[in-house]
Amino acid sequence: MSAARFRCGTVGITGRPNTGKSSLLNRLIGQKLSIVSSKAQTTRHLVTGILTTPGCQYVFVDSPGFQTLHTNVFNKALNRRATDAARDADVVLWVIEAPKLFDADRNLLARIPAKQKVIAVANKVDLAKDRERMMPFLERVSKERAFHAIVPVSAKTGKNIDELLRVIREALPEAPAMYPEDQLTDRDERFFASELVREKLFRELGEELPYSCEVEINSFKEEGALRRIEATIWVDRDSHKPIVIGDKGERLKRIGTAARKDMEKLFDGKVYLGLWVKVKRGWTEDERALRSFGYS
Image (cartoon, rainbow, N blue to C red):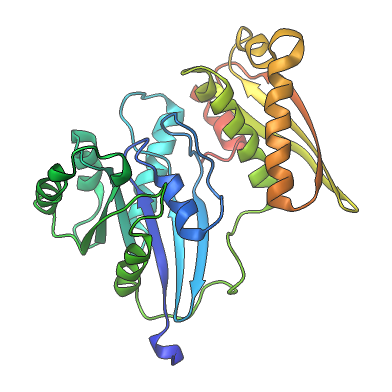
């Protein structure tokens, strides 16, 4: 294929919380890049996943789920990331949960500029119990906007993922590759170490507490085949610290062990992980603290 016909561009993945955006990115790339949990808005940072195929390079950008339930300074920053990722992309994947359509879905869609190419991705079709509802649902979706395409998929099972890639490729501009063909992301190992610890916090803790936790990597050293990582889990209240640590440190040990095992799989090598829990009161409302954690 000639270089002039090679296609490359950014693909923003956006949607309300818990529609499966991060699972979709991981499925599209074929490797776990975005952390996943059953709780909404697990994703906080923009995570770039790069897939290079013959004739095309897809640069996917996973973003936080856009939500209106919480309005603190932190969540406003996450919402800005969600909308900016869509506005700046060559193509936008508007991810919804089939066969449901909520006002929150429509509100986010309205924030995507009219000139943008938008592909509606109806995810979780594997969970749709009433198959007869699917066609009427897709017809309702088609009335929301002049979409480039509407593709029902399952990020969990991989159903229709190849068709989604084909549709995205058609929508991308002709351009040379932005990254080397073997590169999967623009994030480094330090970032993924932090994210894997935070994923375990979301899975281990209750409904509210994970949202007031942040993870900071204090040091990341490679000693031969061993990666020695020291990290701090920040909480915003004194009362949260013993909850994260657990009885005799058992919960913190479970979090650390699970995170370390995933790091060893991702980094393909042994990992020593040291975790500490500290308090930074009110960090979700403190713009200076948010900047220090990378939320600008």
